Image (cartoon, rainbow, N blue to C red):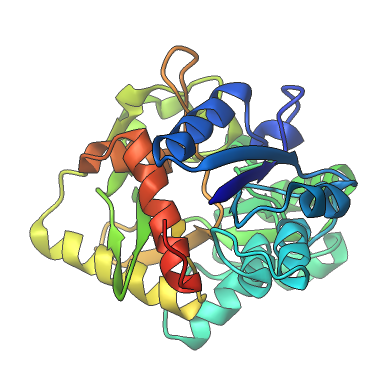
Length: 330
């Protein structure tokens, strides 16, 4: 079988390209694919992708493409692959489009009874007139991933701060801003891994220990993920009671199915002091970075390692999950 890795290569350290994959990640995935004994090829997810993937003639695509531009950019590669009848790892066009839009993800999950913080979507300061209570709020670009545009100074405690920050962000990111009620408390992430003929496996739950870096004020944004990043800030497996573990795992499965997720995903939650759990975000295209030398680690492979998988086995399991859906033999 010929397996093509498709992604956007990180060329710079700009905020937008933080989502793209660095050379180390590419080598790790390549090694994992080749460890299965199958043929590896690479296709960059650029403007020439449609022609280049036809020339590559893969039997299966390991899709990691974040996309170049647009509010549905993570759906571009899946759409082309579906048009060309090429099987691929990961969620489909609709799921990737919905999940890149934070507000739409929340709306879908609210329909399914999933608890999420109160939120507003604002295109400008005028849209924020209706926000008069419920502070503090955390402001997030509505159509970005990897905490792009999110830092501790996005946390606003009154109307004046809200208007000032909102005006600045709408100009800088040229998109709607999600104004989300801030839930003070503990934050957890789950990783899900598809399995043939049964529910996905929920990997070891990870908790962010905000006591290790109080300067971020409980906001896990870009500064926390890059400048201040350290494995010391994360507890995996999370030290939580069995009942809470079961609750988070069940919620993760409900979200997986509600969003029609495939093969892999990362889901983020907050729990307030009363023990209420709130859905924050779902990523159907989770990061795969695992460079311990550069301290460039994504939660998803880290949770897999804490579950007992090597990187090669994680890649194999992802390939097996996709192959089972397409009735392919790995």
